[in-house]
Image (cartoon, rainbow, N blue to C red; front, top):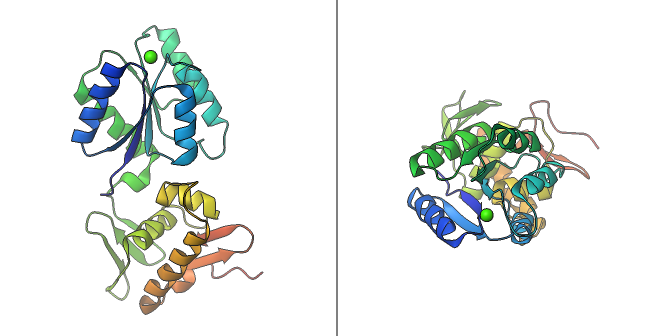
Length: 236
Ligand code: CA
């Protein structure tokens, strides 16, 4: 499974250090932000798989950030787990109403934190799952890193980026994705990679699907982006 990036937004150094240590130990790539401003800059640059967001922060509260991110088309689906010392029922309701996926009260046990992270990722980030996907006559198995054409029983040879790209397309058939959305969801990077990079990997993906007669599944939607379609190419 790919290494998942978790953004930890926490201004108390001791807690931040402890969480970072446990997450790294559990195999996550961890980025740290210590204020609302840093957190915003971090998600603007690279979309993480999940954010662990402290409630009380310099600059803005975690609830305010959650509300702001949920109003942004790019960050609407971002998995958010709120961390806080506040424990009244009203606080929990406010956090969840703002759009957080879950809520954990400090102090918490590491095992519970990791279990809740896994639960949020299962719900929100199907790309993080190792479950095989079948679509358009193709079967993709993330655990085995294998793609095969089901009818022909043939395997496709894909590079790591083409594999992730196809995985993403197969999880969202018929959905049109812009280049910047694909950079966010597949590369995790919205800012530092050129959009042209997407075109290069789309071309490679089609070439890799040619031997199993599936290149036509990857459709260019002019002016909009790319999609995986069962209906055949768009005529524009
Ligand atoms: Ca705090």
